Every structure is written in structure tokens, then in C-alpha cells.
Amino acid sequence: MKQPKEIREAEGKLGVLLPGLGAVATTTIAGTLLARRGLAAPIGSLTQLGTIRLGRRTDDRAPRIKDFLPLAGLDDLVFGAWDVFPDSAYESARHADVLERRHLDAVREELERIRPMPAVFYPEYVRRLHGTHVKKGASKADMVEQVRADLRAFLRETGATRAVAVWCGSTEVYLEPAEVHASIARFEAGLAEDHPAISSSQIYAWACMKERIPFANGAPNLTVDFPAAWELAKKQEVPIAGKDFKTGQTLMKTVIAPGLKARMLGITGWFSTNILGNRDGEVLDDPESFRSKEVSKLGVLETILKPEAYGDLYGKLFHKVRIEYYPPRGDAKEGWDNIDLVGWLGYPMQMKINFLCRDSILAAPIVLDLALLLDLAQRAGLRGTQEWLSFYWKSPMTAPGLYPEHDLFIQSMKLKNTMRWLMGEDLITHLGNEYYD
Image 1 (tube, rainbow, N blue to C red):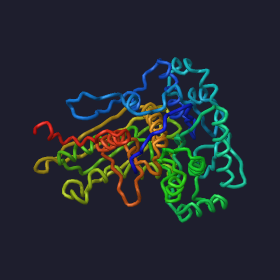
Image 2: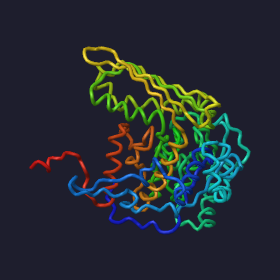
Image 3: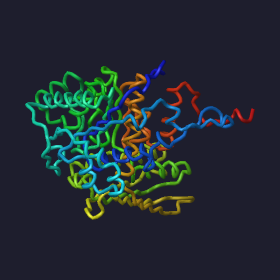
Image 4: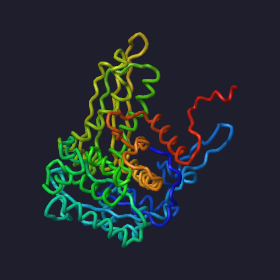
């Protein structure tokens, strides 16, 4: 990326478009509406509550990120969505049962005005859902054009000057890049031919990129992580990012594993299991959808621990991940980890982590941050894969041939240094020798 000479001002309304008006999307929308009225705090949002150190430690410069970066304000956001069910954002939020009535009713009128557009939905990619509010088209190419028409209509009707899209839909069945994903020409031919390797989420992403709308992928789907998408993003000068929001158990892994490795403690086994009862849990009860999530989760430890370099410590690591659909728990996910450690002289130890979290409560601030930061990237003239946003992902996208960085602390440093770089501030290495000259 070239350092931008200027960043366009965040003028006018910013449309935030969410494919999938389920628990994550409605929690994001309601929370943003509450926060801008001062009725609740946007806890978990780095853009809203985080600070960034500038210059030397003795300079005492640590502004709020939202005051440092020229981000869109919460008052300037307008929301739109697609969903396989016709329920309004209020009705969908009630059904999701994440937020209490006191929060939903405080912004009920605004939520009721947000009604989803009919969704692009091919049931073979999400087998546990049976949508009724869906588009019909002659081909997948026609579906792309219908979504493009939705995007233009949304901007026209809301008066938004620009938009971003964040996938908040379900996990699709596992797909690997095929020949159809190799180039723009092959992909568009595949759209016309209804190629089976082109999923619903890819159709949304392709339509958004065609309209020069930044796109972030919140699921482990293939969505924008293939050569044709990278090529189109660069051609259209649009930023893309993904994949799979880093919320509960994987967030803990990217915190704990770097700490254990920093102390050169061995790990022989890491067993992870989750129970959750929301729509995501129901979808993941299908083995093919779970396969997509499993691949996303399993890659984290290997990249952090580097067993090829530390064979004595991690060469025999047994890593297993399970997700169980358990309806009584709803959105209150429980992630349980058992870690078998090896210490000095080979003596065994154990660590147990029981994270009683709330899936959508952790995901919502990520959606907000990504919307604001991708809009910033677009106004700064950045295009293609935005690896600096790895902080937010289980499976960060990278340039071809690069391994992703999973260590949360390195990701945080990269994120904030990119913010400094965008604004012409000195990068911070934390070397600190200048204080002792």
C-alpha cells in the first residue's frame, strides 16, 4: 500500500449494509442506535472507546481513536439488510433474544423501519435454513444484478453518499477455490452458467465490489478470499477484508497461546468445545458448514506456535475443536478449553478455560469497527485485501503466499501502526532506546 496523500472527508451519510439480519446484525444496529442516543455504551468497540499512543511516552499524547482518525460518526450511519425472512430488525431482534426489551423498546421505532430486502439464497450452501423471503432469477449473474439494483436503490432512498457491507449471514458449506475463482472472466462466466462453486455470499460480495462498495466477510466462507475477488477489488479500487469474526474461544486462543509460547512452555494437547443455541449453532449442526468453521478455528494455533521451528515444544500438539448445537443456551455461548502443558524438565501441567460469553455481544462491536475502518480505507484510496484488520478475524486474509498473523498482540500493533501511518504519525516499535541515550 502506498501512503495516502490525503483522506477524503467523511461527508454525508454512510450506509451500512448487512447480508443477514439475524442476531449479530440486529445487536449491532440496536447497539449503535442506543449508543448514539447516549442510552448505552459501545463497549468492545476499539473505534469508539480505544485510545492510540502518538510519539514518545513522555509526550503524553493518547487521543481517542475516533478523535484521531477521520471516521464517520455514529449519527451518520444508516442501516440496510437482506434476509431470508421478512421480519423487521425489531422482530428479528426479539426472535434472536440477545438484547433485553428495555434496550429494544428504547429504539423500537427505528428498528421497525429497517426491513430486509429479499435475500440471495441457494439452500445447498446453508442446509439447515429454509428461507421464504428470497430472490428469484434466471441465473447467478442475474442475482448479482438484482443485488446491484438493491445497492443503488438503498443509496438513493436513504440519501447515503457511500456504503460498506459486512457479511452477518450464516456459515456456508466448505468450499475450496476452483477454476471458476481464478479470474474475473472465469468467475463471470461461472455466474452466467450457475456454477456450483459460486455461493450466495460470493454473489453479494461480487455485486458490492462492482458498485465499489467495500466488503467484509464475517463468516469462514470463501466469499472474497480467491484470486478473482482480489483482482476485482484492485480493479474497482475497493477494500475487502475477512474472514470469520474473532469473538469467543478463538479470541482466547490468540491471547493465551502467544503468552505460553513467549515463556517457551510446551503444549501437547488443546481440546476445545463450544455449545450454543442460536441460528449459527443450528447451521453449524450440519457437518459441511461445521467443516468451514473447523478449518477457520484449527489454523490459529499452528501459525502462532510454529511447530516446525519448535518441534520439542509443539511438534506433537493434538488440537481438536467441537461445536455442539444446544438450543437451551441460545446466544449465550460457552467455550471450554483444556490445555495440556509441559514445563521445566518435562513436568506436566494443565490449564482450563471456561468462557461463558455472548456470541452476538462480542461480534457487534467488531461489525461497527469494520464498517467504520473499511469506509476510512476507501476514502484513503486503499484497495484489495486489508491485512491490517487481521485483529478482527479468525482467519485473516493475506496476500498470496503469506501466512496470516494470528497473535492478537502483533495484530493490535499492526492495526495501530497502520492508523499512525495513515495519519502521517511516526510508527511505534517499542524499542525505547531513546529514553536512555
